[in-house]
Length: 202
Image (cartoon, rainbow, N blue to C red):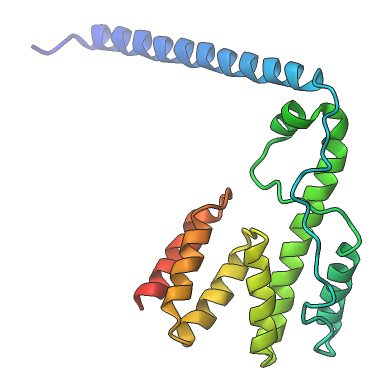
């Protein structure tokens, strides 16, 4: 049986109103939970952070300054500077979670350590790409493998290293890369895995 047009319109309006009200309630609950966690996080006292897994850049053993290129020199300079700074891989961990675990007073220090990590893995990937484009494949591979060892989520790092392994028919190493990529906490995770799986099946 067909409903009159007016009745259908009324039912539609009621349904829209119900959904809007429900979404408003859900949004309010989410906001309340967020601000409650923030309030709690800001009340946490400073906790020890000396035991955290800081990354120490092995500047002396990395293949730096192997190419007389202005961009390569700049990437090398930054990497060497980071050898004297505190570095932590905190990818995917929110500021609220950091404060809850280590105290609000440590947030600025932890944020700086994480920013240093981001700069490090990006510079490693870009330097390796320049090396690769200039025939320094061994040096590039060493840099890329170091990037993987410290948990990089830079897609370029995985793509370049995966291409090297595929070219050398080292498919077991590609599988290892896939296993490693499955553990990263990053928005680029799926794209990285899809590309590596394509290389493993080529």
